[in-house]
Length: 162
Ligand code: SF4
Image (cartoon, rainbow, N blue to C red; front, side, top):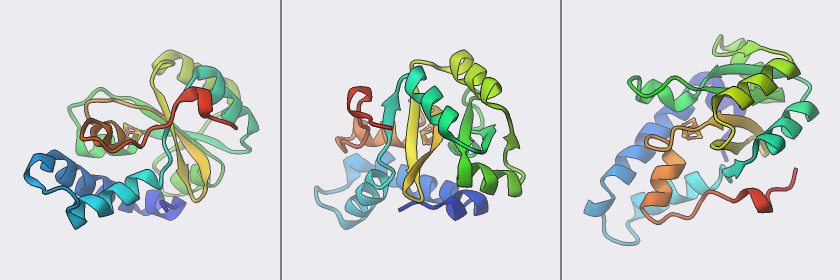
């Protein structure tokens, strides 16, 4: 399971990089390849879900600490559009401690969600809770890449319960 410490230390970016290497070479891998299966397990552990702007706002309202920072996978795709992620509670604290995010208020977070990408927000589980709201960029998003090679990992809004 991904942890707040993985985000704080940047280990998460290394993990995404390895996953992308495997997913990008999927056509070269045999079905059931152990490397592919390991990546599948790691990706599914995030339990990513597309959420509506309303669901994102509800998660924000329930949080005690909110921070904003660059979406973590952009480090691997510097030419991709600049979009930000909202981090909540323990993850927000960890990212602020690591100088990777800034604390913001509820109205500011709501404004960012509504302005950036109300139709493509992914929330994912970190340390067992939904603590990350990302304005995902599908061409580079590791979850979207996984879906494209047949790993069903992204849940749908209708099934998401806060
Ligand atoms: S675009 Fe996808 S992989 Fe990148 S930070 Fe957002 S949710 Fe994670």
